[in-house]
Image 1: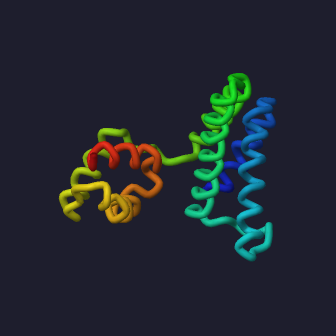
Image 2: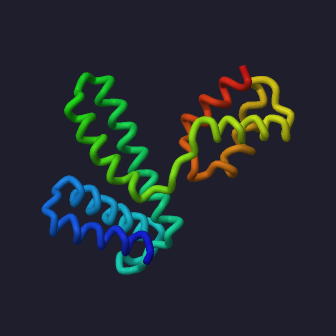
Length: 151
């Protein structure tokens, strides 16, 4: 079953369970899938491939994280809590993320491979790291680890 099909099934289950938050999030994801299809020149009836569907879901998760950050800074914890609830639903469909320790191990290995030693090598290091970590690690965490290692 493809990712869009899985989300459609989950949406049906949310309707049956009368889970309004889950239903809203899943409808939003399906809408984002349709928008992605239209943006790539396909019709809304086409099926979005799983790799593109994952990118759409990651984007939705990143938007929620940014919103949580903004609401927290703005002193609106009730809105941040709503976004956190939505983020938990979105994360169910994302692949497991690497731990900080796993990221540190890969960063250390990559530093040794390319011979990075200073902050000036950061661009080259990030360029080598991101293909290895794509979809498995948050870019912010990777940047924090790289900053710590190169300082």
